Image (cartoon, rainbow, N blue to C red; front, side, top):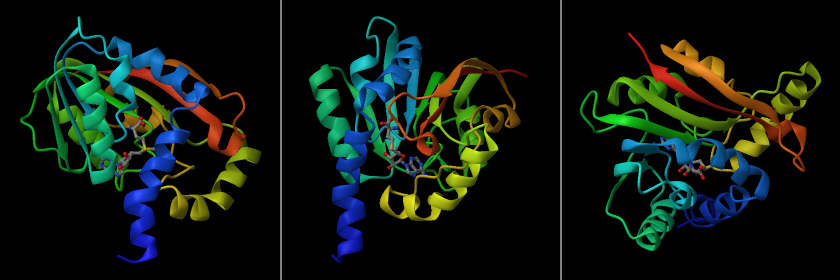
Length: 210
Ligand SMILES: C[S@@+](CC[C@H](N)C(=O)[O-])C[C@H]1O[C@@H](n2cnc3c(N)ncnc32)[C@H](O)[C@@H]1O
C-alpha cells in the first residue's frame, strides 16, 4: 500500500473523526440526531459519532452505510457501546441497497460535502424514505458571503485532497430542496472557533412530500 492509499484509508478516517467531534460540531448534531424516530437509516455513518445521540426509546431499528472500511470499524465499536443491534454496511450513497419507502427517518450529517454526486445521493435518500418521512441533516457548505465563498473556492482543491474528498463550496439546504423535499431550515450560522471558510453550518428537517 502506497502512502496516499494508507493516508486515505487508515489515517484520514481517524483525523476526520477527531475534527468531527469538536464541541461546535457536536452542538449541530445534537440539534437533529435525537429527533430520529422509527426505522432509521444514516448515510455516511462512518466514525459512529452520532450513535451516542440516538434516542433508543424512539428508534425502532437502525441501518447505516459508508464506503470507508476504517470508518465502519469505528461505527461498529460505537454500535457495540450503544448495545443495540444495527445493520451497518459498506457502500455509497449514490446506490443504496434498500427497497423504496423503507425508512421513517434518514440522517445525514457532514456527508453531503464528501459524496461524489450530491443530487444522486439525495435522490436515493428520498427514494428509501416512506411518504412523509424525514431527512434530518446537519452539514457544512457554501457560505452566504461572497468574500468567504472566494476563499472556499481557492482552498477547496487542497482541502479535498487532505480530508477525504470533503468539498467546501457545496450549497446545503437549497440542494436538498431541489430534490423534492419540503425543507424546514432549523438553523444556519458560522460555527464558533472555526475558520469561516469551513465553518458555515446548516441544519434542518426535510420532509418527503408528493
Ligand atoms: C466528514 S466524514 C463525516 C462522517 C459522519 N457522517 C459524521 O457525521 O461524523 C464524511 C463521511 O462521508 C463518507 N462518504 C464519502 N463518500 C461517500 C459516499 N459516496 N456515500 C456515502 N458516504 C460517503 C466518508 O467515508 C465519511 O465517513
